[in-house]
Length: 373
Image (cartoon, helix red, strand yellow):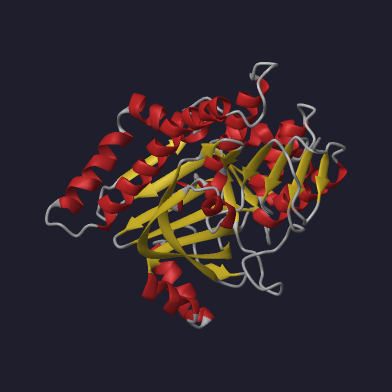
């Protein structure tokens, strides 16, 4: 008889969350992971990642008792979103006040979140963290988009590169962020400034800049002054001068979907199951929604049914299919809409953005989808 009920593969946020949440059901978990804080590459490379978490994701972290363990400056409340198109008049805004909610999202330091989850896993009585494989009735694969175990299980990952790379960094601005996330769709690039409180409270931002591959790689090597000048121009001076406060990092962007996402004795979660464009900031939220769905399916299973029962895991696949495909399709369509240079499309897409801004029910529906995934 195996010493474990569930084997979780992966060393990131999603893997630790799924291990901790299933452990709350009294299941014995083997978390096959490396220590947290691996960063973006070499150990010396600064981790500049920041995630936008929706209320559902924050609720999961609260349930796991890790949300309040985050340093206060590692989580920043988003009260408003200000989004601009690439033509005069293209604009849409969202407000927590208008949606009668505490916040639209929270921007969280990736390394800080990984650290508190690592600590929680190491103290959880039902979770055993070990680098070597373990036998269990159910294997949950949360190894990320480059998962080796996914292919070994027979799942195929259909990946379609955008030809764009994301450039990330931390910035400090002249003006306070006031809890406002800002985004510019500027064909062919998309610039996002995420309000943050590190390194300076109320004055910091997480940068995510989607650009054609060659441009992103070129900007990675630009002198600081040249890079800051480009930021000033791209952000239209909305927050005053922006100062680079970290290293810069880049990575390729793609849309990808695994098929199937579950089978006899196994399930894929997070980036091992799907990858989306970061323009909506929903990548980690999708992964944590997988965690919540798998937890719910396991909690509702019949007493006689084994954890690895194919029928049980098919319930998980069905539960996640529609929401995942809708988010992937929506972000992909939006990217292609603003990347296109077709005649007349520029005015049409910006007019459409402004039209949505004036249709309150549609805005509420869009925001409700993003807040729940």
